[in-house]
Image (cartoon, rainbow, N blue to C red; front, side, top):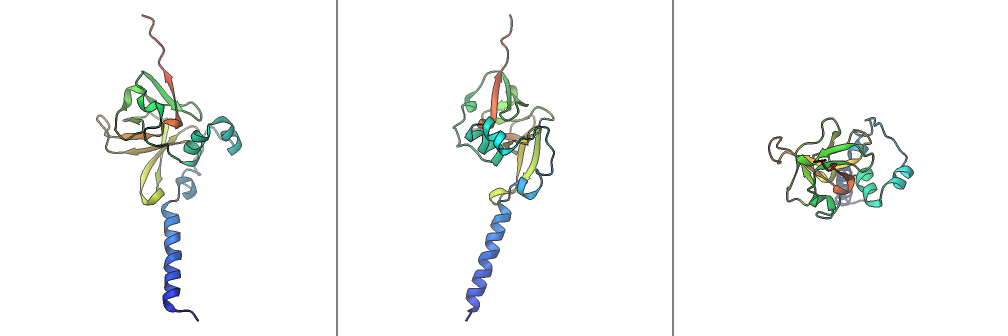
Length: 170
């Protein structure tokens, strides 16, 4: 015989599980990014063959790296930070700054090369940034950055490659 407390506890548990699933749904699961068309489309096998396991986890599965683990965190030369998936230039070195977060941070992307979607993962609402050309997840943008934009693009360094500027011929 069912006890009313057991029935209510079971219903509450199922409701809680479904709410948790909704809260951690990624933009692709929510259909936001899935509906977006990208210039570069590859199969999972093609992405896995091209990227390192860490790059694949970040760019294709919305993963993140351990804070302080990216060599690009300490990259201070002039140059361009590009997508590790398709080599699209994303950030100029002049827009990089030290945020103290453990991830490379920029106050502005190269215009038109970064897309944004709402990210409701882990019970938070954030703005995810991704590569406009291949859709690779890059990180998130926050409104606590420096002037002139006031934005902080908190980017997973393993989702980027760095291309140093050519040495001047002086």
